[in-house]
Amino acid sequence: MLFNSPEFIFLFLPVMFFGYFLLNAKRLTLAARGYLVAGSLFFYAYYSVIYLPLILFSMTINYAFGRYFSHFAREREREREREREKRLRR
Image (cartoon, rainbow, N blue to C red; front, side, top):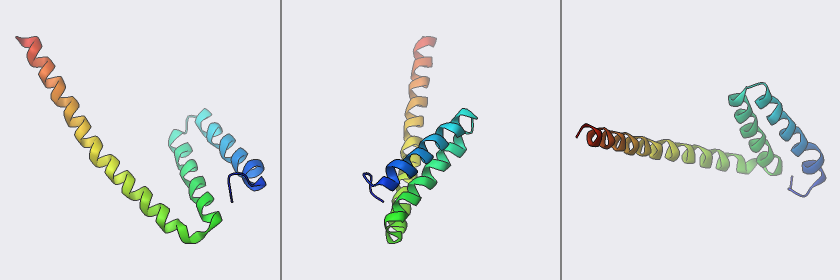
C-alpha cells in the first residue's frame, strides 16, 4: 500500500483517523496509541511482510533509547530542583 493508492486514501486513512479520534473521545488514550501502532504495523506489513521484523526491531530500539535518555532528563530536573531549594534556604 502506498500513500497515494486508493486503498490508503479511501479505506486505511479514514478508518485509522476516525478510529483514533473515537478512542480518544472515549478517553481511551492508551488504546488509541495501541490502535495507531497496530495500524502502522499493518501498513508496513501490507506492502511486504518481510519488512515487519525490521520495523519491530527499530521500534523496540527507539523505545529503549527513549526510556534510557528520559532517565537522565528526570535526574537533571531533580538536580535543578535541589539547587533551587538550596538557593531559597540561603
